[in-house]
Amino acid sequence: MKVRKAAVVGGGPGGLYAARLMRLADPGLEVVVHEQGLPETTFGFGVALGARTQRNLEAADPDSLRDILAASYPHDMSMRVGDRVARVPGGRLVAIARTELLAVLGRHAEKAGVELRHGERVDPADLDADVVVVADGVSSATRTGGADAFGASVEVGRGLFLWAGTDFALDEAMFAPATTEHGTFVAHAYPYAPDRSTFLVEADEGTWRRAGFDRTTDETPSDASDETALAYLSDAFAQRLRGHRLIGNRTRWQRFRTVTCARWSDGNRVLLGDAAHTAHYSVGSGTKLAMEDAIALCEALAAAPDRDAAFAGYQRRRKPEVARMQALARRSQRWWDSFPARTHLPVEQLTVAYMSRAGNVPLARFAASTPGVVRAGLAQYSGEPPERVDLADPDAWVSARPWAGFPSRVVHRGMLTDFTEVTNVPADPWCAEADELVRRLTRAGRAAWVTGPADRGDLLTRLEFAERLRLAGLPMVIAEGPAELFPDLTAGLAAGRTDLIAIQNRP
Ligand SMILES: Cc1cc2nc3c(=O)[nH]c(=O)nc-3n(C[C@H](O)[C@H](O)[C@H](O)COP(=O)(O)OP(=O)(O)OC[C@H]3O[C@@H](n4cnc5c(N)ncnc54)[C@H](O)[C@@H]3O)c2cc1C
Image (cartoon, rainbow, N blue to C red; front, side):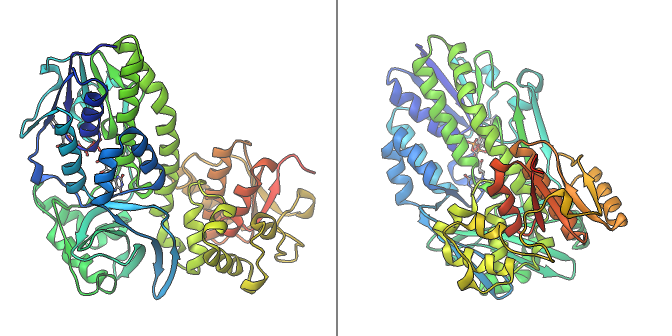
C-alpha cells in the first residue's frame, strides 16, 4: 500500500526499528519518531537477545544487527544455590546495554532518513499521518485511553521485582537465591558489557513486606531509586557481587504487568511492542517481540493493498506467536514466583526443572546440549550413580526407574488402591482456589491422581499442580497424560513435579 506519512510514538527498540524498516522499504515515505525522553535518560540496564532473534534481525536488516552484535556481550548461564553451581552453555545468547541498543537503532534510523524528535511527549490523536505506530511501552497512554477500542487487559503479577545493575561483568548469567531473616530473594543477573551486569532481584510479597519494602516503595519518588532496597540487596548478595554494590537507575520494586490486547489497531493507530503485549522478563523476550513486531508490520504494509488490510495481516501474523510466548512466560513467571520452594533440590536437578519449567525445552534436547548437567540431574532424580544414566533416550530411562516398590514410574489404576482423583486443576495452580484444593488434599493425606483434558496446556498445568502437591508433602502424586505427551510427563518426573506418571486411556 502507499503510505505518505508515518509517525511513531515512542523511541524504544520497537519504535526505532519499525521507523528504520519502514524507510528502508519505502525511501519516499516521511517517518518521524516522537520520543518523550532525551537519549541519555533512558531507563534500564542490559537486555538479552537469543540466537533465533538474531537470525530474524539478520534477515530483516543485517546492517543494524552487525552493529548491535558489535556492541553486545556474549554469555553462558549458571544456576547457583549456596556453593553449588550448574553451568549451561548460552549458545549465541548475547546481552546489550539498553542505551547502546537505542543508540545503534537511532543511528540506523537516521541513516535511513527517519527524523527523530526527542523530548516531546505526544498524543497520537494530534499527529497528522496515514499510519501512527504506537510503540509507547508497557504503560502506553494510547492503549489505556483506548482500552475498549483495543480490548486491552492487564494482569498484575503476585511477586515483586526490581531492575538494578552492577559495575562489573559477571562471568556468566546467573540465577541465585539469597536468604535473609525476612525470606528469600532471587537474582537473575547477566553481564552486558565489560564493566556492567544487569542484576534483577525478585521477592514474594511476604518477604518484601517483612523487609519493609512496602514502606520504602511508597517513600521513593518516581524519578529516584529505592536506595534502602539497593543497600539491603547489595549486602544480601555480597558473595555474588564480590564486593561491588548494586546501582540504581530509577530502580524501584514493581509487579510485572502482562498486557494483552484483543485488537492491535484502531483507525490509523497500530500498537507495537510492549504497548500491545508483554511477556514476563524471565523468558527475556520483550525486546525481541517488539523488534519482530516491527518486521511483521513493515512487511504487511508493503504487501497489503490498503492500511486496514495491512494492520489485519500484521495482527494475524503476530498474535499467535505472541500468545505462544505469553503462555510460556506465564508458566515461567509462576515457576520463578515459587522458586524458593525448590531450593532444596540438588542444583543440577533444579536446572533440569528450570529448563523444563515452561514446556519449551524437551529433556532429550537439553541432554544433547548439556549432557553433564542432565546426567547429574537424572542421577539425583533416580538415586543411581551418574555413569548408569542413559542419555541416548532420557525419556525412556527416566520412566523406567523403579520407585517405592513400583517396577517403573509408569503406573495404571489397577496398581493403586487408595488415592484421590483430582480432575479440576485450576488454570493458575498457585491461585487462592488452588491453595484451598491443596489444603483439602493434604488433610485427606492420601495419594493424588491428577488427571484432566488431553491437551498439552492442560497437562503442563497439571504437572505444575502435581508439584505443589508434592511440595505440600502428599505421600504420592501421579500425573496422568496422553501417550503423545510422554516427553512432558517424563520431564515432570525428572524435575520432581510428580512421583509417578500414567498414560491416559490405557488400562
Ligand atoms: C525488569 C525487566 C527486564 C527485562 N529484560 C529483558 C531482556 O532481558 N530481554 C528483552 O528482550 N527484554 C527485556 N525486557 C523488556 C524490554 O525492556 C521491553 O519489552 C522493550 O523495551 C519493549 O520495547 P518497546 O519499544 O515496545 O517499548 P519501550 O522500550 O518501553 O519504549 C517505549 C518508549 O516510548 C516512550 N513514550 C511513552 N509514551 C510516549 C509519548 N506519549 N510520547 C512520546 N514518547 C513516549 C517512552 O519514553 C519509551 O522510550 C525487560 C523488561 C523489564 C521490565
